[in-house]
Image 1: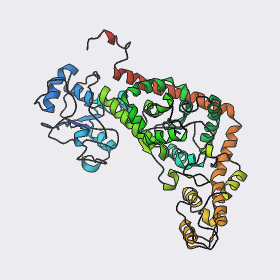
Image 2 (image 1 turned 45 degrees about the vertical axis):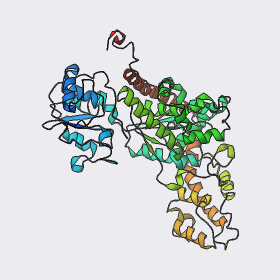
Image 3 (image 1 turned 30 degrees about the horizontal axis):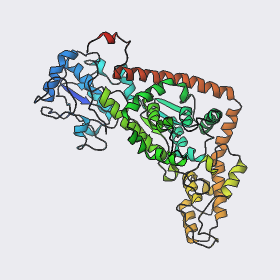
Image 4 (image 1 turned 180 degrees about the horizontal axis):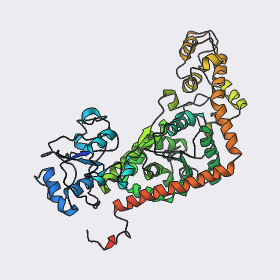
Length: 495
Ligand code: TRP
């Protein structure tokens, strides 16, 4: 839910002109319908002009002189507003409207947000208000991806189907204006403080895996987290907006504390990593975060921080959406031993950089259905890692190529369930599928390995670009928090 309750930030430049209607655009999918009548509409927004009993319109009018015009006031309240003529404006907050319009809210006429905004907006009359042209608004409309991985080892096929594949598809979809892919070394240090060398060594490994999967430095900015000190600063401010008990309830943190035997003494830095992850996402104003399913609690926590920050300091941060793989099997690929998660410490991973022989050995040793002892026995495909991998990796064209006697995966599964299909045959097929999927990745990795100085330069230049973006956000954050002391002599001002 988008929380529009907030303190009124210091004035934007007041805009002249008379407004009669405002259609409020919230980020992308949520739009407030201009509902005509607004007198008497409840507003959950604190308005400083004495507000008891007054209508929202009246309260806004009282505020108008301070901001230069009524339009100025509205612009302060609704940074996404599009103004147009001849109708009344709507000041209902998202919160008030939420129960009525849950899910995707259509604009009147069923247009999408962009079309409706474009047609509602009168360019000649209100040039400064265009969400497409006014520079200070422009960034709110951009579609931005931020995501990343901890450099604690080479990336494996779980990373690939769980997130990397989706990132590459999103990158190549052309739908995103900016894409940031971060090697989260500072986060990796939160539980590897004593092994900085391990983190350091894996920076290049992860960068190579990224490039091997098809992330393209021309389209995506690859960078290293610790090279952006603004992220640490932002984390520190966010820490004030989150309680210890809230972090303790984060299921991913809970699971990781258990896994690392941290129960008795949790490092503070580790405990705070969900907060730092919120800083990573918001510093880049990410609208979309493609990650694995295990990161869902992190995104929820991030959204809470965004809402809280915007409520306390005024609308500054962008609310991100998580993007999960659509294919169920990709959400959490089990290890080759059938354990729930692929993890380096369990030694149950197939790495993107594994040789064809490694892949073959690992596939042939894979855990399958323990009740399927002889070929004739009926077998289970659900929860069977070999079939989960096939669900995640197999494409229809692999059947004519490697297993022409079956029309597709459904037929293969049916045969296995009936009995009469041996594990070795299915594993050999899976091996062929994995070899076909991973060969181009391995090839690209080998090509990049020959150009390590170029990889280094990609990370260096990417970190420089990323730092500029984060610094711009920090500038806005400090302004919203009113700690931008040396801008505009503002310490000398009385308000
Ligand atoms: N937590 C992620 C992982 O374990 C890495 C990460 C750090 C991240 N910051 C992020 C992912 C921001 C997405 C967005 O792999």
